[in-house]
Image (cartoon, rainbow, N blue to C red; front, side, top):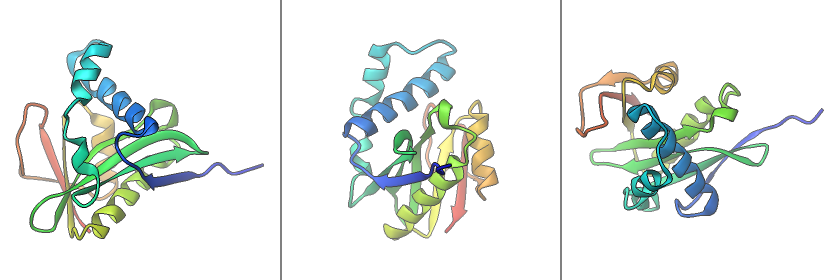
Length: 161
């Protein structure tokens, strides 16, 4: 029986797979926030000019996670000041959750952060994204003071690399 494996490859945010994953990410987090399904127009608006272009070198890195070759998730790293890198758009499609990919995706993003020269990773999320928060804590992230603020930022995490 063949073993299905996870792979994590750098990819531009505007490739078809990366774009579809970014749209799925936005659809899920917006729908949960609004407590109703996001419309296609709202998803379009959410991913337009969302700053994802900063996730390309030299300021960042964007990874597409594949399970058995199928696009399953994504995540980005944005280099900040003082040797910090922010993890952003960390996402696994629901059909691929529970297969060990979340921790492996975080490992890949942390490796990308190190390659950019970061010594610490930080991230922000919402309190209602309980599953994501659980994965971050399980992977060694601890709550930190806010390093930035915004309407969808309710809790902040950091980890030394």
